[in-house]
Amino acid sequence: MRDYDEVTSFLGEWGLFQRLIFFLLSASIIPNGFNGMSVVFLAGTPEHRCRVPDSANLSSAWRNHSAPLRLQDGRQVPHNCRRYRLAAIANFSALGLEPGRDVDLEQLEQEDCLDGWEFSQDVYLSTIVTEWNLVCKEDWKTPLTTSLFFVGVLLGSFFSGQLSDRFGRKSILFATMAVQTAFSFLQIFSTNWEMFTVLFVIVGMGQISNYVVAFILGTEILGKSVRIIFSTLGVCTFFAVGYMLLPLFAYFIRDWRMLLLALTVPGLLCVPLWWFIPESPRWLISQRRFREAEEIIQKAAKMNNVAVPAVIFDPVELQELRPLKQEKVFILDLFRTRNIATITIMSILLWMLTSVGYFALSLNSPNLHGDAYLNCFLSALIEVPAYITAWLLLRTLPRRYIIAGVLFFGGGVLLLIQLVPADYNFVSIGLVMLGKFGVTSAFSMLYVFTAELYPTMVRNMAVGITSMASRVGSIIAPYFVYLGAYNKVLPYILMGSLTVLIGIITLFFPESFGMTLPESLEEMQKVKCIHLIFRFRSGKKTRDSMNNEENPKVLITSF
Image 1 (cartoon, rainbow, N blue to C red):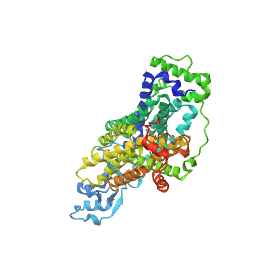
Image 2 (image 1 turned 180 degrees about the horizontal axis):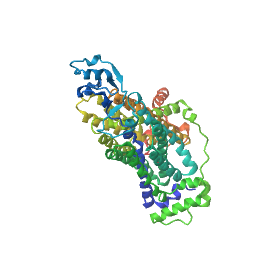
Image 3 (image 1 turned 135 degrees about the vertical axis):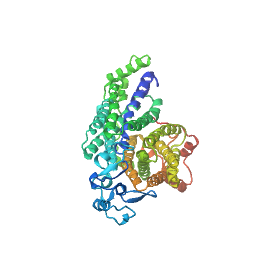
Image 4 (image 1 turned 60 degrees about the vertical axis):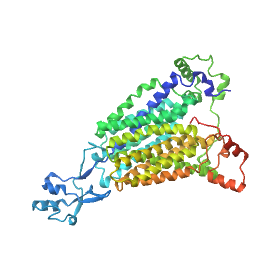
């Protein structure tokens, strides 16, 4: 009996068909890059202060001193949310009194911004913040907008796999592309924050579903040697390309409605891909649709200019190609023993805190000193070498050491930001980018690492649970950015500390590099602290562990 890869080996690994699938599926991820991070500019908060109506008849001196001063990052700046009581300063202005000289400003009564706000248009012409005054007492809505988008991502990641198993990879891929594009377009016509946010949740559901299904489709169609490149360099790099396009669009289109329209149009360019991207032959076989699967493979062979066997799927082998009936597993199986529960809890923490660091650094890029658009571009650009580095490290070095190493590096440079003098902003920006490099490298390794730790029977469940933990991290991340309004270095101190902490925890994971993938829960390796205790008590190593250490085998999973 031969498996699917052996049956289709005559196609080759990197023919015209495989190259076409690789680049078309990767290209379909590009809109995810700019839609996933679009909130950075759609919900940007420009400089603002209380509006003083023209009818107030204030002198220019009193207009300039209508807002009290507050301490921010070591300097006095006008208050964004308070002003001196307008009736009082209008009376002083009418009497010809000068602020600060004739009137002690610290003794004046203050009031809220009763007439709204004046927003600077130096960076943004309009955002949802300026549209619906999401500042001061309403500023909690800005991080909530981003968090609710990631709630949609969480829901989409939960349903997308089940839908693609039921209705097919290709159908759900293009359906979720349509959802992302259509509901992004509907957001343009939002009349209030509530409407915008509800639509944004649905956009988030479509955004991650498209990403996940494209990932699954690519790994099922492409051969073994190409899958690891597709799942790391292909998908991730093209996501970064879309992310890099976002600040380019936003720089030239500074009105949030027109920016949304511009970001929606590229989604329409994915429509022709329907005639070039086939259904997954593996999925068709699982549905007993062998004739359709053979037609796709025959077209692939013709495209690759290779001879097609007279019989692709031998009737004798069809039974073997059916999905194997597997033992039922439940989420509690991930906590069955102390060792498995420890690995699962550490994995959840690793995914969640790494996700917090990645998304908080990405969302905070416009708040860095200097040009918001350039900083966002640099934040996207640094991801490309991070993905390449992760791919190279995964091929040759032990997993837990390289993941812990890049986390230590990323967290360490983030902690150094608090030591940089205020005048050396370029140094702070450089450290932020290096921190993003480390966290992104670690994030891109987690799928492979988690898949190698768990046995076959619970592997998909383990990856699903831990990746859902990363969505929880992305929901929390906007509030780390929110803390920057009170102290600019506080988010970096928190992110750096948590990143270093999770790097330390990573060292206690069992090593998966060079080890045979476990097939049962009993074959899972011991957590390092438990393993050391066991060795201390027994006073000797087992012969198997000694053989593994002396003769490690290189293993790169197709996941």
